[in-house]
Amino acid sequence: MLTCPICSAPLSAADNGVVCPAGHRFDRARQGYLNLLPVQHKNSRDPGDNQAMVEARRDFLNAGHYAPVAQRLAELAAERAPARWLDIGCGEGYYTAQLAQALPRADGYALDISREAVKRACRRDPNLT
Figure 1 (cartoon, rainbow, N blue to C red):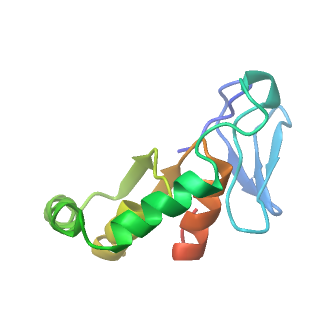
Figure 2 (figure 1 turned 180 degrees about the vertical axis):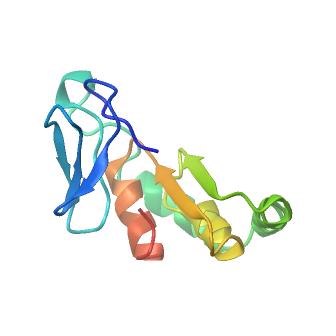
């Protein structure tokens, strides 16, 4: 499902990360995420939301303001019962965790450009990739 951001070949699981047939390797961070954004494609040293932004969004979402949206999203996903799903722009994993719970047999993936947000998503649910 994942492809190499350098050569577009498929990525396969390897020791503590993923690798493509050309040997491009991406290690899994100790927090559990994979960083697939090559350094030459970054427009800043640390792209995406910073820690303060991520914490503010987490606090807002955890207060339940969007709980009905998250619940309905999980219901719709469960009705379709996909084998795989992808949360692009997952942030700190609020909706990702809802999808993972609603689709326990499906392979789920979550992506975000913010390293800080992805760290939070992995803390929210250690089973997320």
